[in-house]
Image 1 (cartoon, rainbow, N blue to C red):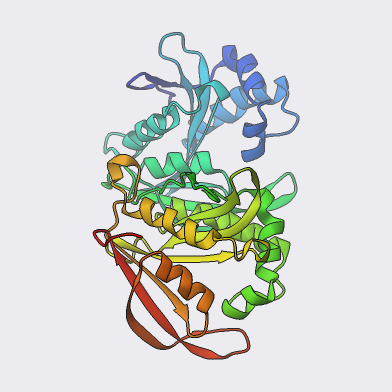
Image 2 (image 1 turned 90 degrees about the vertical axis):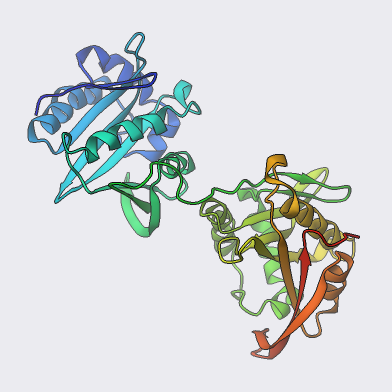
Length: 373
């Protein structure tokens, strides 16, 4: 197959050529490109030369790897790379990277859509499926795939070897005929400031505080499903999964912190947004060092206002929230009642606490038009 160009709005895709070797060498020094690709490190001029003169040329000749440089249509400057690895039997995998100065401009999303249109077209490759994969944690790449309609199928543990180390990867699929727009919401995690507490997104630096809180005897007693001991590695995985919940549209999870900053003093969540029609379930825990200071009461109030706030103002526009506590957890009951929730039922033998004891769950709800305290 002879290389050809693809053109879109403010976008040109054209095969890399010898004149691009210096530019490719320069771009591939970028730490983000090095972090998320399997490029050699250090990346030299000879690597770029071999890529253009051997890898790209052979890929087009065999029709197995079609590579384009993402270019500025005005001056043809290389701003990234995108390629199709043809897997056969109607499928291919798309991969891409961008120069630092081109990020945040939706250029990658436009390039992926342009390549996908060609890949699915009868006068193109006539494919039925496009695959995308990236190392877990590569959120910019995942957001591009999400914006183009790819649906994340799951995670493959140890799915790629990068410089001798196995990493987990996400995998996603776009099928021919599916809209090239998000198939599910990607929920924002806004910072919600209060007078005595701030709800913010979790950070990797919160791992120690999460482990401390989840090893606390009181937390362990009421949340019987927590691992024991709760290790720092489990805490790191918990923090990573909070981002996953938002990206998949299932829930929003915040770390509570003091207004002046510092590590997490609690975790507060709106869960089950896809399964609760127009609603969500609230869950939370508080670090032992922060108990008795009104943290939970204020944080739940912040979540309620965000949940019921109109979408046009940055809220979630929900109509109903539910929350529960097990029999005997009076501290949680008081928080729920102060927040204005009303009891609506008992789930008998609904929860197992530490030691295998099974207790009733007392359920409460709050509607968007209920008066708030």
